[in-house]
Image (cartoon, rainbow, N blue to C red; front, top):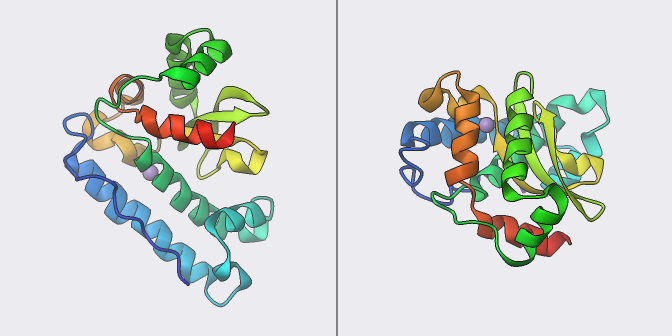
Length: 199
Ligand code: MN3
């Protein structure tokens, strides 16, 4: 069965004016869709075609001859995860997750500071992530399509810092996009769900 493009989990206008409908249309309907199309072409007729997306990512992560498959599979995964972590005015961390953030970073503000720094300093394309790593929350950044699951870490949240994620709305101001993401666009219920499954 071919890999499929999940629908955007909200209306194209749902994040306006913080992320425009134009950005979401291009980002989901062109970029994300393109990765799905490419992945299906690359795995057609191979044993990878019948594996889960996670299995494909883990099976190809350290094989340079399969870099194209890895890049497209990871991009499909990363984008679906990114969409699900976005919600306009998505609340604040509460309960156990809030306690864990305070225990791991000292405060929510310090988490935001580290996450913004990670995203802003990722040279070129990539992602900033909140992950659970051996029971600890950490902020990490990855280049290009790379995904922390290949390092044994469990993603709880990601921000896409490829230019296509923010350029129409923020031009070159990646730190401003990240600050808006951190203050107004995190779906904290989604993060809490990921944490509850992983802890
Ligand atoms: Mn993207």
